[in-house]
Amino acid sequence: PVCLGSLSIVVYNARVTQRIEYIRIPLTHPHYHAFNLVTQQYMPIEYIRVSEATRALNPDSLPLEGVFRAELPPLGFASFQLKLSLNHVGRVLRSVPMYYGEDLVVESQVYKVHFDPKTGALKMITNKLAGLSGKSDKLTQRFMEYSSSTGDKVDKQPSGAYIFRPLNDSADDLGDPVLTDYIPGELFTEIWQTFDGWISQVTRVYYDKFYIEVEWTVGPIPLDHGREIITRYDTSLATNKTFYTDSNGRELVKRVLNHQPTWDLNVTEPIAGNYYPVNTRATIVDTIKGMQLTVLTDRTQGAASLGDGQVEFMVHRRILKDDFRGVSEPLNETANGEGLIARGRHWLFYSDTISYHMHRDIGLDLFYKPNVVIGNQGGLEVPTWNFYKGKTPASNYLNIVTLQKIPSVNGTALLVRLENTLPESEGGKPITVKLDDLFGVEGDYSGCQELGLAADRDIKKVVDYKAHTQHDNPDKNIITLQPFQIRTFVLNFASSTNETENLF
Image (cartoon, rainbow, N blue to C red; front, side, top):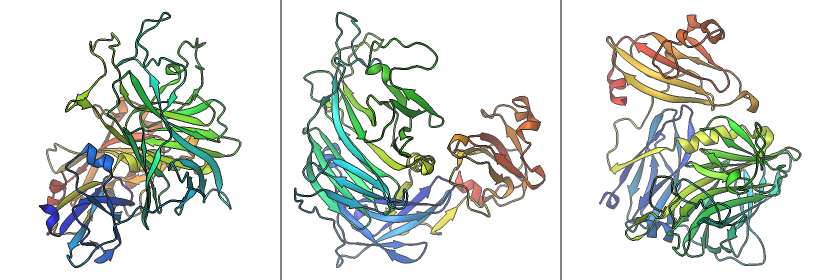
């Protein structure tokens, strides 16, 4: 019913920096004008039909999505309206017929991407900003599978919920995809593919984004044998058997094929023994060419680089035998009598190594996805508001890890963790923060207490306080975050305000 009239949309940005995002709203029809309540101006909106994979995943999906470009304030919200006009028919993006003679080329402000006109598969990518004429590399992607081991003469250990043990030392290709739709627009372009009937994918190139979005949908996996599904990205980068994985979203750890830096590795599992957990990203680098590819993930996945210029990710599994590790059942999860369907996103960031640090900023955008609230016409009394009140824009690499109101005897107290997300090895510099004008809390700032990371004891009991604060300016309430540092504070304000109460 909410889609029958005009809609009010509020989008919240949890990052401390201003950002631009493309907001997708499910709709029943294209009879809307998009209106920015902040600027009091109409803005472009494009409509696209929902894919068959989405409808299979959720039969109650509305038939269309409306997509518009939103500017969001730091640590705050902006309001928009979709004004119903039955006499108006918005632009519904259509699939364009393809001809098999030439590559399908999609360009944005940042990238020029070549796709195969028959399969829709990635072929080549150019970063138009890397150098005077841009730099290019082969970039292909395949879906493949490892057949699950059920135990053998060498080792009776089968693959299962806790153990990844493939039957063979190579993955089987799941075949060429079919390009089902090429849908160009002014804000974005989408490439739709289907693989083998139970895998589909949408590749999105946004007009001004530094990443290419790959949204994959896998399942239900056929039940004929244990299958462990991967997607593999293959490039022409010379990576010298090396790739990098993040450690809980922070440090990048160097991984070398069939090698461990602290002991002599006896390779008995050439596939599983080279898989590593990836929480947020994996990177391959060509130090000679000076180019890199980072794949950012929306969830934790296993990843490996088993060949030069390659990186692969485990996206789904369905296994028919228990691995004897305590679950006492095979990894054969079902819903409504069928195997589970997994959907996820990869963001591909291809750049020269000079711009490599941008993966930190892009990763924060993926992690702190905008919160979208949709309601009937009316909306909020104020069209925009932000809790960050710094007199200068915050660094793109400043992150507010925690912002929580805590009990206070007199006034308002905020538990705040501040993070400098860029390490020195990636060009990170100290970030200064003025604590007394950081947040929009009305009332007098009355000081702060710095705590240890767990916020359970004073910082003086944790570190050498003099060395820890040597770059701070306490007289002006200024603290300095060194590269990759996280600091924890309780900020105190003399009086509680409606503004702060409403925030929490």
